[in-house]
Amino acid sequence: MKNKTILFSLIALIACSCHFETHGEYDGAWYSESFIDGYLIPQEIRISDSTKNEFRFEGIYLSGEAKEKIKKKCGDTTYKSMLVSPNDGIVTDFHRIEITSNIDFDSEHKAGELLNDIAMFHGKSAWKFIQAGCPKEQEDILYRYGYWPIDKLASEITGEDLILLHPDFSIQFAKQPENPGTYLINIAFIGDGITIEKDMEMTFGND
Image 1 (tube, rainbow, N blue to C red):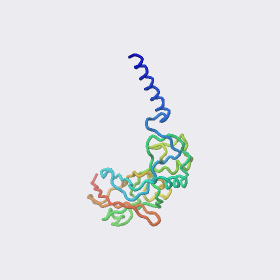
Image 2: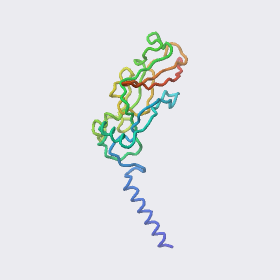
Image 3: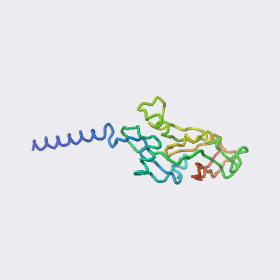
Image 4: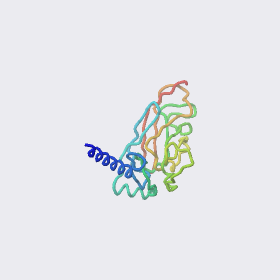
């Protein structure tokens, strides 16, 4: 009985050793030459959390030869390290964001006019990290390793900000509308020959 116990202990020890050798420091991690694991062709925007004005792109993830081509096109071949969880990035080339309201927001922003100068976009992009060669140490404060934070007015967003953008983002307003109530806010991502947009009801109060 004692010999069997020792045998089982040795088997368990060998199994654990193989596990850590395969996955490294983190359980479930895997080796990847690219930082982005999921290249997403966005088809729509859905509301993730209406109370926080949070959104997410949904669409088709590239695979096989198409995935390999976009990796090389983006230069995403130098990460060569372990990934703990999948990293996503959209591959559609958007140039700008346009945010509007269905009714007058205030005297300076009539119905249908751009709210870009008062609407803050919060997101993150892997583009700068990949273009820098995926350095292993970052001196800048990032809210997730490898993704650069994009916290700008929509009017300041550039096409480069939207390259390999993470699918999750949020919109906040720098000021309240003149009249409290519910507004239908339209958020549109615009590129060459493509527009993906979403309407969401946002309720503004007096506070």
